[in-house]
Amino acid sequence: MSELALFPLKTVLLPGNRLPLKIFEPRYSDMIAHCMRDEHDFGIVLIHKGEETDPDAEIFSFGCSARVVDWQNRNDGLLGITALGMQRFQIISLRHAEDGLLIADVEFPPETIIEQVPQQYQYMSELLQHIQSNKAAAPDSLSFSDTVYQLLFLLPLENAFKQQLLEVPDTHDRAIALHAELIRLGVIQYVKPGL
Image 1 (tube, one colour):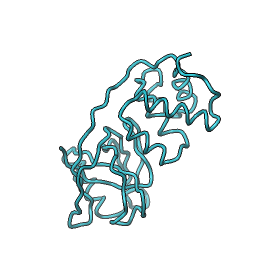
Image 2 (cartoon, rainbow, N blue to C red; image 1 turned 90 degrees about the vertical axis):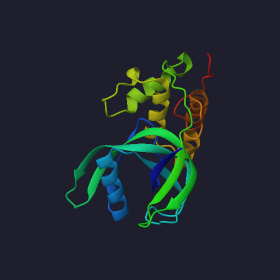
Image 3 (cartoon, rainbow, N blue to C red; image 1 turned 135 degrees about the vertical axis):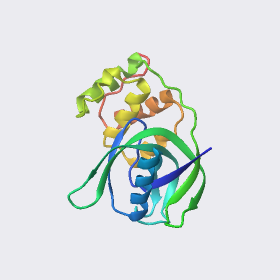
Image 4 (cartoon, one colour; image 1 turned 135 degrees about the horizontal axis):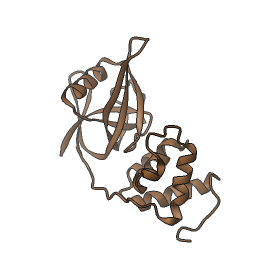
């Protein structure tokens, strides 16, 4: 079991994805300073009920650990950071620090990384290449697991759906659900997986 300071947000972070954040609350400024100084990760979790500034906001029990990979002092005097999603985690227990920061004991469920994109999902790599504006990681160099995570993060899908698939432990199951959602939204026409 590990301990993570949590940053509840109204967005879902997924492994391998980068999320720009503007830090303005003192408790989070202190948390980020601590994480950068001691090279610790923190946790990003989706808010189920409440606001980002609400210390008693209800959160989901699964989140994604995050690492600060870039920072800058903004013109408005606030700290801007870029958080990189690292690993899925499940919250085991929660407590509040004196400054109101939410601290969690978490476990990191095992996840099997699938490298090769199955033929029936080759279109996912092509779709990612089409929508991806940052060419830092070419889609054809990504594992299948990362490709699915990237699509989930970049496509304009509901947070509830992204959260649901963050909690799914298997890449193939995650891909099947994403495939069905893309058909439902009309992004792709029906193609039976396996053909």
